[in-house]
Length: 348
Figure (cartoon, rainbow, N blue to C red):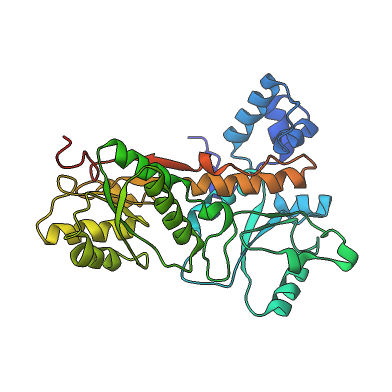
């Protein structure tokens, strides 16, 4: 019996090269490079052939070799404020996906200390030998100003700002959907409302409260109470038992889904049914809300899309293109009515 050649295990084989991809696709290695740079001028047929070859060979660009050749690090730094218990994971997930698709690695950096320490940290990151670009979710104006107002040495994009305690500001704190929630519930016949708010020192909570009160006034509705909360299930539970149950309100606008869960359980504990007696609307589209009883009406916020769009703006700068305008908040928010809201009692 002839001796059989030993097959080398796949994991032990050398990774495919750009030249092998080019050979399989029937193009030059320069064309494969254009494909990896996402050159928009490539012909569709060529694009398909190279894409198929990349997938078949499971080709991954050699970032170390590219860095030596282009004098780039292929790294992007994402800047967050001083570390806290809260991290915008969904936004980071979207940014990381966009970066990896373009061949970049993402480093997450927290800014701690006083203004001098922050400026020193940013100054180090702004060196081209450390990162190719910076995506910040915190203000950097004072930290990146060079001598005589000179521009930073690497591209910088600031998007969706948080303050030092990770309190949302700007686009992240947009509260327009609060008015839409009130209008939606009013269309179901509700006239008497309660709002269980988030902490007053959070811009997002304050803005939601402001938009709620404005909508109540503009639509000629009645707000029986605005209850101070702290984003927690317990604050919703306490508000339901101590205030909402005896208020005569038929609809509750909660500052977030955790508060809404507490409100529903608190109402149920005193014999009130949701939505038969009182409707409850949350905010954030927590996964638990899709499987709770009743399922929770909420506001879905597409944080992954926001993170991806922010990173794509930075990538456009790195590639010498004009970046797209920041996202309009209207495309990030979507009302998701579910079983926790229904017609007001007496209007069915």
